[in-house]
Length: 267
Ligand SMILES: [Zn+2]
Figure 1 (spheres, rainbow, N blue to C red):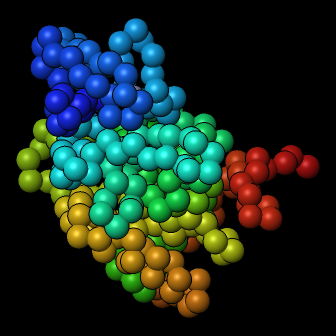
Figure 2 (cartoon, rainbow, N blue to C red):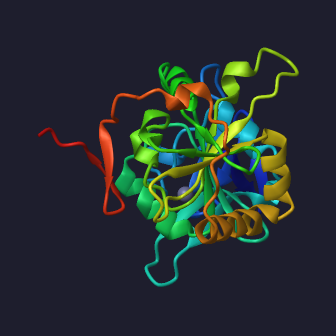
């Protein structure tokens, strides 16, 4: 973790320091070495939150965009006694989880159920093939009458399978690939939760805008309003389709059946 309590103050790890876990109250040791990012670990290898993943520079640079008071917030479900540490919880209750590792769909779903008002930010560069696969799928994005909003018939061709059924918005961050090139705009792509329409909605989001709207509290209202509107009024396809969309494509491996993505059966 980035923080432990030292004299009741959220403190970052420095060599030799000892602290208290703000979530479970047990002792923590500062780990400051050459290989891993400086962090606090529970004494004796125990982890109080099974959902916690070891942090990378990617996690830290995301967290650092938000006030310290919003970072690593221990949340308790009073009915079940379940407790987890959210990467970020904003003043309006929005939880932002930064996910680098693979997560299976069941665990993803339990986290969404626990945090409720949340958005995922997913490291889109975990596997080497993720970005090329996304770029290939992106050529089939269908533009709509709203700038930066696309429809996709086969989201499984762009995004990892584990995220397709998400009940909350999932933002894919491909930024790591562009870090060395200064000044380049590296948009992120937000996959919205599926509704009854037989396509997925994707928004191209600028990193700065994402940070700004999650900081000022506009994210929740804007995404809720967008989803409400898109359910009510069908987003019109623009009249001129990119040429590649008119070419008949090979069918996807997955098919949407009664609201669930299933492997296409062979007949
Ligand atoms: Zn703990």
